[in-house]
Image (tube, rainbow, N blue to C red; front, side):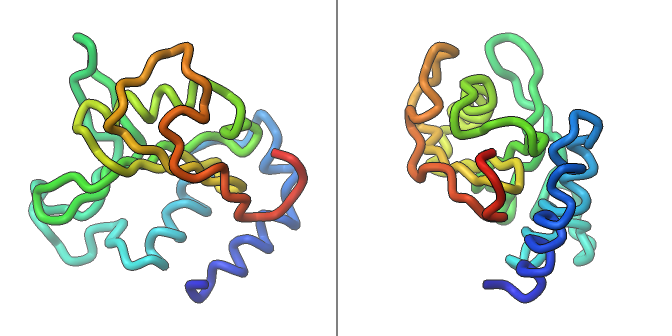
Amino acid sequence: MPPGLHELVERFKCNYDQYLSQDYKEADLRKEFIDPVFEMLGWDMANKKGYAEQYKEVKYEPSLEIEGGTKSPDYEFRIGEKTIFYVEAKKPHVDIGFDKLPAFQLRRYAFSRSLPLSILTNFNRISIYDGRFKPDKNDSPSVARMMHPIKLALVRNS
């Protein structure tokens, strides 16, 4: 386990009811929990290395052309100029294990680039998807899911 992850998980568990509130913003979840986890895993979340835009390891809300419109995943993780995976974050109250829409949303992003891996998370749980399968809005969230929701914070049934 990366150093510091245990502390993040404990903080989430101790304040779970507040994070589960409809008032808790996704942007706060990203800043307080998701960004730090990826930093612990070695990703340069704040571009401390000073890379030019096209070489940043992490791009926030990059624009993608999907079905004639512009969409934006929360994170694009890259090596050089190559996209490796997307991460889509949802508020902790969103049940990413059973709600169809978040999985469809992430899968559309990943399919647009034929990415073999993309991540959906509300911090409490993490689901990993294969983006090479064409998504359909009626798909079960289990379609193309490589790993069932991994329960990170181990609190309640969200």
